[in-house]
Image 1 (cartoon, one colour):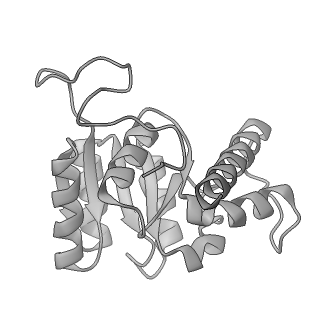
Image 2 (cartoon, rainbow, N blue to C red; image 1 turned 90 degrees about the vertical axis):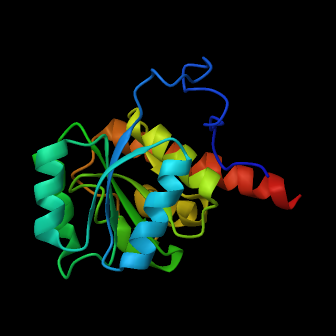
Image 3 (cartoon, one colour; image 1 turned 180 degrees about the horizontal axis):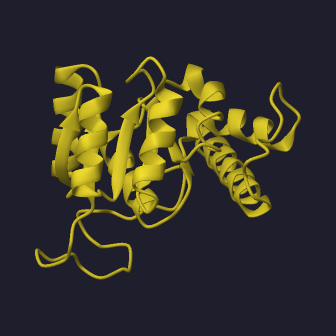
Length: 196
């Protein structure tokens, strides 16, 4: 299976290219999803991928308490987690500014996720990713990269280039817009390569 962006095989190497060892720190994650079964499944996938799940939240108050307590590397929030998920994302990003706040959503909602980037989200991942792609994407996000799933790349590219229904979010810096456009272009090219 070809990945849509440069990824590292978590089972074999760390992002620096060294073999992983038990003494190396693992990326910590707080998982926020309203449904127990799905939340537990996500946590299980993350543990299998080498992540340290430090907390799970079903409600906003629990999420904010967990991120304040643990200061995780990654805060994974499902788009339907709360009635006002944008406020939750903004609050999470302000409480733990060094953490990667990541949205998990369905590709059909990709356009609405563009609203999450200016308020603090560093990435948007599709629920259609394989467990390996999911873990690899989170690893990239934890080290500071911006990641958007390939099945959302067209929406991001159109939204940030201004040729779609949405214009580029004003709150993004020039460099952030440039990176997101390039990510979208690479993902689109990789998708085309797989279909050729």
